[in-house]
Image 1: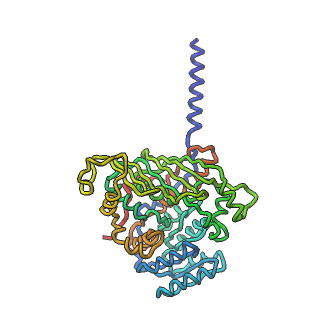
Image 2: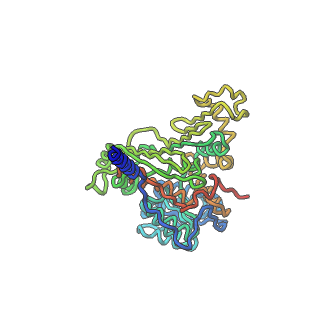
Length: 462
């Protein structure tokens, strides 16, 4: 009998150990930091009184950047580059009509962007090309001694991410991702409220990119965006949703994303769009799903929920939702706040005992809250931003803050590790999905320094 019990116990132990091993997260390569190379957390660079810019890519996002920069003091656009000469010409017309000097033109050859990066009269390369060229241009620009700002997503693979990190650390040049949604008026106001403790401890945040793109597919040059979805699976465009969420949770500023699990639906509309608008590679089955979702857990036990859907008819949404121990905020489908009945700001609601934690505060109270906790950046820039425009003004604020920090020798609002963390979801979500929705370990892109800074902050000149 004792022998029987021994073998039964041994069998249970083997099964338990097997199950435990089976559910360990998939780990990807996390290369060691090269010798002589140090982190760039809090990186500052010498002040630049007049920021001289080369813009590479002048499609929908590129030309709008030109239109915004003409309203920012201390900026000179020195070079304009796009394979399509007519776009370069139109951008120069914009400069001339605003009273600015025309920039040098580069067009007709898809490799001419290197010439722009090699110029000695440029401080910042502004990259607004298709996704698959972002990282290559960013690396080369830093190697030529330039700071670099790259449209989202700035990198599509982990290899590209590590290349950008290593190059930034080696050259001590800024590498920022042009994530505009972190400057949205509701998002920044809510971030300010969270940083002042109104929601208590944040435990869960949500973000998404839900944007039905059928009417846009024909406008992407050479159909590059639909081609990418045809050949790749996973959340291929996560940064609008995850960027604001990570700032709320102080990612790599006291916490870090540790593990993710992703899953997706089958592709129905994606396949229809591929047939309707055409794709380069017709020999493969359409890869990306109509809807993809990702769950993430942090080192400190917080959670994030991120979604991607550009294929089905739905109202536009970035979700932007936070759950705290004392309150809740939500931007989509409606902007609302909810708080528990204690520890509330009595200057906003004197009779705070009548607060109902089961429902949102009234529209009047919400407006009072947003006015009282308006972010300092918005206090300074809101009127001008709404006048200039760019997704309601947040694009202008993004560019203005970039130039402001470069001119004053300050750390940028987003660094290369933000870029890495937010873009890593692209490849890591695919890895989870293609391995039966297995958990995947998220690398520490700071390589040991995620807890060096305490809390997310915007830098200001004294």
